[in-house]
Image 1 (tube, rainbow, N blue to C red):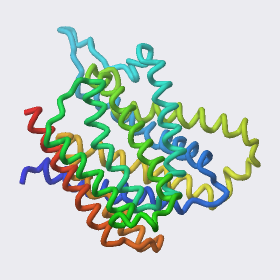
Image 2 (image 1 turned 180 degrees about the vertical axis):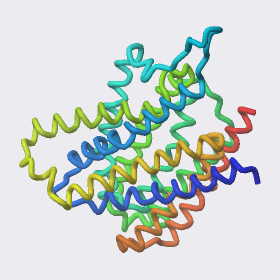
Image 3 (image 1 turned 135 degrees about the horizontal axis):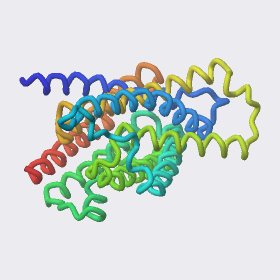
Length: 319
């Protein structure tokens, strides 16, 4: 096995753990920290974590890409956030979109539960195909359509417990619907930023910082104006612990994702990250006391197999 493949598998597996933990921490949030406040502070903590990472990346980009003239003067240098003027309104839109997503993340998981919620988020693969076709004119094969249907079948089996319609919890269905909306908006945002990455106007790390400083700033300001809370809520030890834990775990998952992408192509990295519903199910069983049923296990297997086939088919199209 190649050295980079090994590193990619290691960082990917670490990322699977952090991503699997995200729903658990979201559900364990203190009662005083509602979804709006939790979303705002998660974005703020992520912004604080990614700021130094962005500066380190910027320094490395310049040190690795310096060009000098015959007299030893530097003639080329990368500029931090050099595409911000051209893409200003797009950045604002992405910030608003991901801010809304962060709020709905907490609402959706509260209602759907960690196991059903994490499985539902895997529909991002389908929405990536769908929006890629609609917005970027990317091709979809018959096999991808078949396994997209199989993916949703696995999700339906998990949520309905083998279609026992009488026992379906309406609260869970609404939560699943919210997480489906999150998955669609998340992929929509990434589809819009894909051309920017291709033009090298901003890096993914910079994009994470930009969207979080916008999301966090807008959410925090509107929260203070709308709810006029007691400011002690921001420094209460239990709330502070939750804010930093949630933001750190969310950031760690993103860092491991981008680190994995530095060793593997996006198709392989997506496959490596596909078992996150299993880690969420294990954590939910151990920490939250949720029951991982046979229906959910079968649904998870169908979803993961579908993801792998869809991604590998897409990879074969690109080669």
